[in-house]
Length: 164
Ligand SMILES: CC(C)(COP(=O)(O)OP(=O)(O)OC[C@H]1O[C@@H](n2cnc3c(N)ncnc32)[C@H](O)[C@@H]1OP(=O)(O)O)[C@@H](O)C(=O)NCCC(=O)NCCS
Figure 1: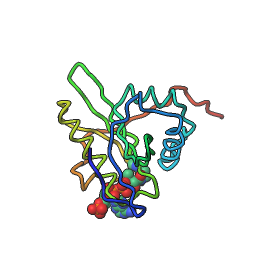
Figure 2: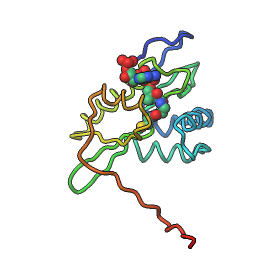
Figure 3: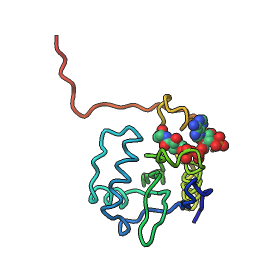
Figure 4: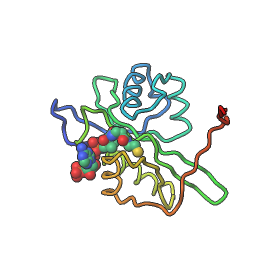
């Protein structure tokens, strides 16, 4: 388990993989707060949704421990796509709690993802990042990510009605 530099409050932070069986109601507030920091529209996550997500994806969390429980202060999801042409991995939902930023947690989460991606046998890890997220771009560039020669396209599932 990676251990980050101690925080100001001397709380040690560890990087763990969040397993379905570890998820408790107390983690919902932590994750909702991180989703708010990320600017997600969907912040009212339920235990069932978090468990479903942890089952479908690999979720890595930066946690502080107290007694037998832990608080989630950062997270990242690694989405596995088992395609006919092989395994493809996408990194999503990278976020660190405001009080724990700039302590190397983003870098630690990324390094754990890259280690496991290699163990899984993937050639690359892909991600998209809005150009306005300058800090995240710094982190990704510093960690060896570079622009891929491809375009991201998107279409709403329901056509918008146009008023004439
Ligand atoms: C991006 C984010 C995850 C980084 O987390 P973090 O734990 O603070 O990052 P780290 O402490 O590991 O810093 C790693 C690198 O990121 C960059 N970085 C982090 N904070 C920075 C800041 N305030 N200004 C400029 N660069 C910064 C630096 O390159 C830094 O390396 P350095 O410390 O050697 O200079 C965090 O800022 C965050 O949650 N942002 C909001 C959500 C977001 O934008 N997510 C990305 C979605 S694509």
